[in-house]
Structure formats: structure tokens, C-alpha cells
Length: 313
Image (cartoon, rainbow, N blue to C red; front, side, top):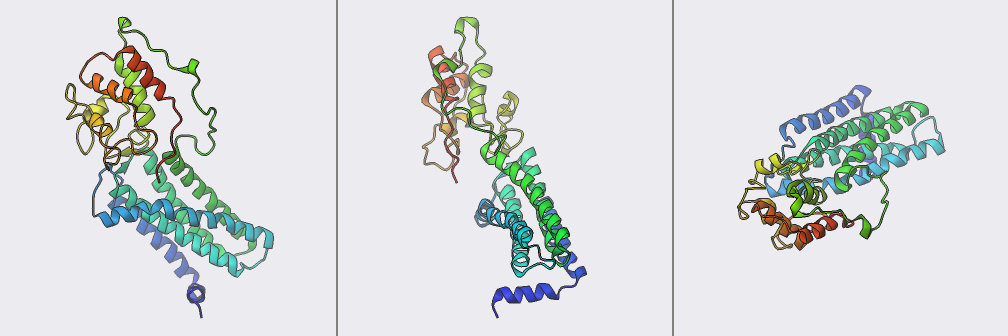
């Protein structure tokens, strides 16, 4: 007898009450773990748990794909009793979703994530695990009820996946189309001259930060407790210090990190295009309270419109 058959026999031996207890108990464990290991923006050890959390991105795709396939078997076969294939796939998707959420909770806590979207993704994932478990409980019911349970589970999983996709690929994913391959010359942002007393933070620095930094250090997603979407947040800094210290480049982490060797683990940004020399120069001049020359500002702003590179896996 294969291990799979042994698992099936043990599952068949469970009473309805025992099966419900398993689903409730395992998912209550996830809820409790989410409170014990909060996504608070702190980066911490041990390294083994940090690495385990990284497997969240790998672990979530397989059970999600399986969950999508199960209703196809149900719809085209239309058996009153669940087939062996449906039973195996449904239970696998429920267990796999639970494991992916477990890795996600560890990933957020040990790798320094926080923010509104992180919380929404986390609790959406827990809800997906619960509904995947409910779908597996309905295997003993009739065809229509099983199918409805699976479709609802897919809907909840789809919501959690959508929020996670926006965290990884930007707002609107996967429904936001790429409308242009590269910026046109006439669309280069106009920079006012210094004689017009340009506000360098508002018109130059903030667009650079929005293009390269806010995706991981904004309201929706906060790594290392650092937000970079307002001047006040830059001054406040994060768990590793202040991003902006007026007049001091060595203490301003927003400058230190972008000037490191790209091979350094602390080099920023970790995703997308690195800052151009004009963007780095503009940030340095702004920190030192020096005016940013128009030609530097123009090139720095033009680079913010460049197509982003694919995020690192």
C-alpha cells in the first residue's frame, strides 16, 4: 500500500466531527501564530526561520494551481460521489494552502514586512486556507455543494493572491496593462529654473523616491519599519536609523544604501532599476541643502520614467 493510500484511508476513517475539528484547529493555529509573530517591520533571526519564510513565494503557487483544477474535474465528470482524483487534489490544495500561509506568516515576521497591504494579504491568506479546508470537508456531499465550495475557495484565494500580486508587481496587477514601452522625449518632465525657486524635495526628490523606494517603503508595504513617502517619515527613519539627516550624508541611510556596491546585501533598491548617477547626485545635494542644477534635475526625473526591470526572485 502506497503512502497516499494510507493517508486516504486515515482521512476516510475520520468522522465528520473529527474532520471539522482538524480544519478549525489547524487554522486557529494560523490565527494564533499571526498574533504571536506579527508583521511589525522588524528584521530578525534566526536565519533558518528567515529562509523558511522565503519559501512562501514558492509554496503558494502549487496549491493555488491545484485548487483551480479541482472544479474542472468536478464539472466535466459530474459524479454524485467525489472521485479519487478530486479527493486527492482537494485535500492536497487545502494542506498546501495552509503550509503556504504558515511560511507567509514567518516570512513577514522574520524578514521585516509591515503595512496595510501586508496585513490584508496575511488575513486573506488565512481566509483562503479556511475555505480550502471547508471545500475538502464537503467531499462527502453532493456534486453541486462540492462545486460551490470549491468555487468560493478559489474566489477567496484569488483575492489574497491579487493583494500579494500588487505587493510584488505594483498596484492594479494583474489587470493593469503596460501602456507604453518607454517614455517619449516630449513627455520628459519639465523642470523649472532655479530662478523660480524650485522646491527640490517636491519636484525632484519625491518623484525619485516614488519611482524607486515607496513600493517597499510606503503605506501599503513597509520594510524595516521605514516609510519614504513623506518628508516626516524620512526624518523619523526605520529600525536601522534615519533615512534623512540634514547636512550629513554618512548618517542619511537613503544616500548610504544607494551608493553601496550593487553586490552588497544592503544595496538599495533591491528590486527594479538602480538609481542613476544623476538621481544619486540630486539626493546628495538635497541632503546637503544645496541647489540641484537644472540639468541634473532634468536627467534624474527623466530616469524615473524608465521601464522597470523585473523584480529579483
